[in-house]
Image 1 (spheres, rainbow, N blue to C red):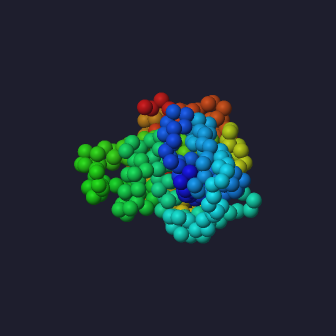
Image 2: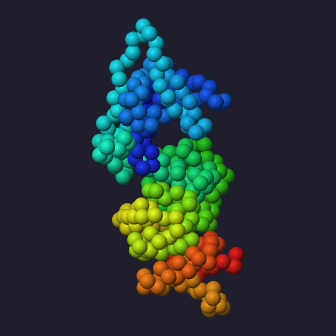
Image 3: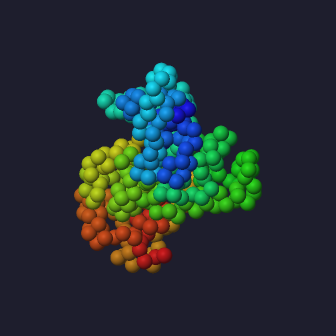
Length: 315
Ligand SMILES: [Zn+2]
């Protein structure tokens, strides 16, 4: 192991990892392995320069298991966890007896990068051509500061990016615009709301259909959704009410999504999906939909509109 460094994730969690002499582990060459957190580094007493055992945790992420004693070799002093974020220099925070350490600066560039990469990743909005390197360029050039900025990017904005020809710029812009057709559940995953995984996102999308309805939901309405326990409900409730997230949603609605089309009079009443404004009636309607297994209805609904009338059967 050559050294220990830290990376900053999209939630601000700071994870120590080992920089290795390249080594073949379970069939592939690895040069980095996770050390999980500060306590693990301490418990395993691994130090830069040590000979270490590496394995693939869950066959995917390589991790350092332990140091191998080398009698007679003088070891380096124990590694110290940084006190400031390597990306933005703010003081790192460790809460209570949790083993994780966080950068809590919302403007931290490392967090923004990780959030944006997650936003575009396969399980989220699956935006082809928007990987870590490209996102890094967009941030460095000041073309985006937030995921909501992605949707205002024009082909001409991207011409300054190194290694991106007109053709690739055009396909990137169209891939970003294409993400708008993704269902609400994928957007909820993409936003990286704490505790909201693919399953909860699907249930929430089924129950509420639009982001606007989710924003308006009470804690009780969120909690009664199948598969959404009190922890997830509280997390979503808090997320949609957060000032910054509210502003982002408004920007999404303004720059990213066309205004909802006016309700057509040709449509028969049974196709109407108006959700009553009184919260008791609303819960009842939502519960009824769930019982009916109204699973397709949320598809292709513009995320931030009020178009509760978009329904299955149409497209
Ligand atoms: Zn930071």
